[in-house]
Image 1: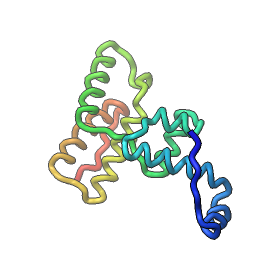
Image 2 (image 1 turned 90 degrees about the vertical axis):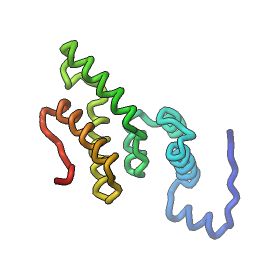
Image 3 (image 1 turned 45 degrees about the vertical axis):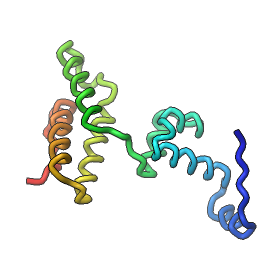
Length: 144
């Protein structure tokens, strides 16, 4: 699909001065908003922008478009982790290790912005237990 955007000349010149590649920036803005709204998946953003998985992660993280993750996702990941550990698979081989640690960091940021309550505290306690299994260290941003 091709999309044409009409801009007043002065605004177009200003954007061309500020942004070297206005069409690319417009495409990135559409991809970003699509991801934030849930209309696009990580993979779709990756395809739209012709990026690798990790480049897409970096793109989204730099723009504070974080992974959607709730208690059901955490429960599923914990069950998977427990199943893998029971089979003797080492934690270094768990594919989502980095993502889980980043989720915990995001939850700590969320809490530090005073967006906290009993549900957040409970969620942080659960994810802290997972990060302890992943790294062997107790990570905690829980308020004492």
